[in-house]
Image (cartoon, rainbow, N blue to C red; front, side, top):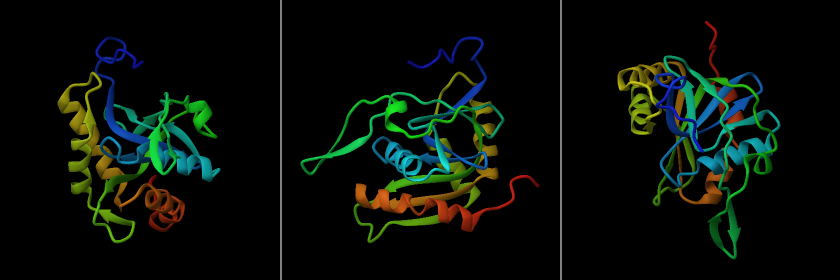
Length: 196
């Protein structure tokens, strides 16, 4: 159950996105933004459970304080995908059982990955996009969390200006898992100084 964001003390404090988020050991947050069934849970599960440098912040809905780029930890019940006789299904499982590591504190957004399943994709790719394009995608995946819309837009703009953004395109569930495994190398390659 979600906190009552439309009531005090939460009112006008948080901005939400339809996104999963993981915390890197260097206190940076990676967001996985996408529509329903785009691979947010799969992406967070794959990174956290296959790489000791990452911890779960959230797998479905990301919350940050208004006008900030700080992502709060919000582990909830997750619905990881499992192969079942060739089919992909989801089942309910507490985050503490599904993920190896759960973050106890938040992190600053450094990278955003927009998940784009594409039927005609030849091979999975990660392509960097502009801050303007990133802002447009953030607005598209915005979720109301009790903060005035203008304040929410300012927060999304701040995130888009600060974080490096890329589109992750893939065709199948297995392609997504494979491309997600390359994210640690990708962020090292594209790293920029966030403290200047």
